[in-house]
Length: 368
Image 1 (cartoon, helix red, strand yellow):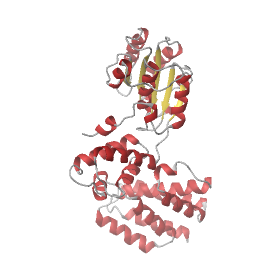
Image 2 (spheres, one colour; image 1 turned 60 degrees about the vertical axis):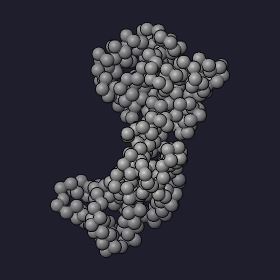
Image 3 (cartoon, helix red, strand yellow; image 1 turned 120 degrees about the vertical axis):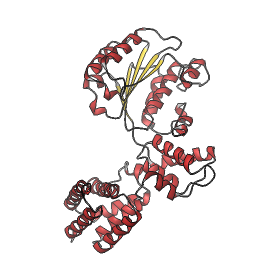
Image 4 (cartoon, one colour; image 1 turned 45 degrees about the vertical axis):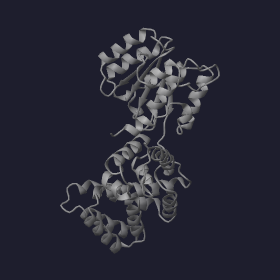
């Protein structure tokens, strides 16, 4: 069943949390020094560990066996077990996407008033907090301004720019980053070893690339692949591509290489080959745009960009910087404009490959 791996292999202690090092270290220090704030804001992309780390933090500050100066929950006491099993009445998780109104927040304010039933702190984890209505956000603000000593709020959001500034100012903010491909692959390898899943070379890397930095998405995709294809045999690259409708990065880089070498005939012939294979041309256009965007970023920054490691292999990163050295910023800007306009036209084209062919002609003529 999809999602089983994500739940089964969710970290239960800080030591199991192998990413977001800055956030983890700061929270551990706060616990060791007993400097617990009443409100935290965890912001970042989906599937990077925001709610998981919130649960670990809630468990650590409520652990009955944790000694002074320590930060790790024991995972054995009744408080830790209640949280692990989702039975604690003092750990309240609220989905703001579905409970976003003023009435829900008024109900929360009533629950805040009461002391914890069994834990030291009553912890409220508010997921997708940016989706609260304006009235609900203002009502929550009043609670954040004067919270009781036993209440701790952890707000999680994927769109921090939608949060009202007054709430942001009441919280300690931690920004979560997308995971690097190599870190996701390492996590998937551990799951494959534990579950006795066999995969062809490159399968885990492809799964990780498709997840766009989200460990949860990668684990869920591996779970789906195992359910559909891998019960009695090795999971193949072809099966992964079939599952996700994936446009391999090798195809994208080959097209970019043709264009930058001004090999128009080869690029058009290759495009027709891809059409015969049933490649999704809109997805292909998006991937080509992203490739040129990265070339532009490499050209502007002129130094290694850490985010590239989250999405590209080492060989692909080297290629990006090589192309960046040989192109002008103005040409890259024009190429991106051509491709973005092309993507908009593709939805209305009778022939899906025609807008891309015309774009290739424009790009090669631009570079001559």
